Amino acid sequence: MKERTTTRRRLLTAMLAASSVALAGCKQKAGSQKTPEEKEVTLVVRAAKNCNDGRPLQIVVRTTMRKSFVEEDYSAVARLVVVPDESVVQTLLVFPGQVAVIPLKFDKYPEALGVYGMFNRGKGESWKKLADRPLEIDVVAGESAFERWGVREREASSK
Image (cartoon, rainbow, N blue to C red; front, side, top):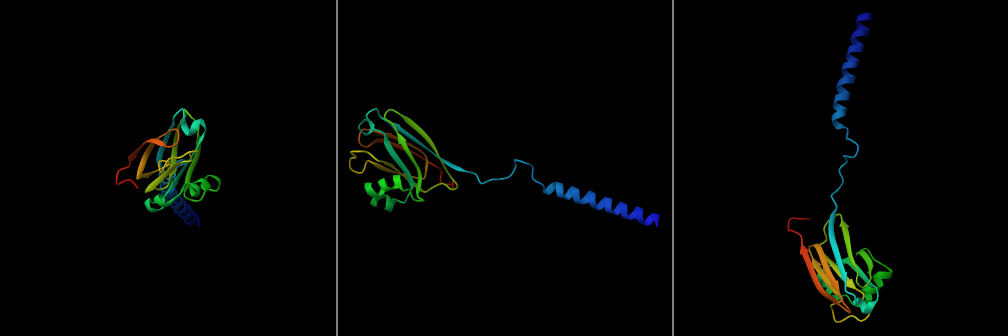
């Protein structure tokens, strides 16, 4: 009888040892939990001293497609400042003479971003710019329009 109990204890001990070794391999360490890698696009807005006639400039950044970007008018984008929809990534206010560097974070890189300056006296279509496959967008806001514009595109393999 005593031999049977000892055998059962040894068997139970061996099973517990085996299962603890197996479970140790499955257990994740604290802080090592994998999260999806965030994608980042950097927006740099340089406002000239005379930007927007010396008044703060509202900037709207949104995901868009070329066709809808071309068709958008000023009043439709201006409404997004007050009531943003799901396409709006960021709104910001830049003061004359200020440089704003804004990291825009995404789960998946956008195909295109529209950057819109709500100038008081905008000229033609230079109040909005389209960035295809952006990694970094650098824009200079002048008196009544975007004066300079640069986009560093990401590589084709980045998604």
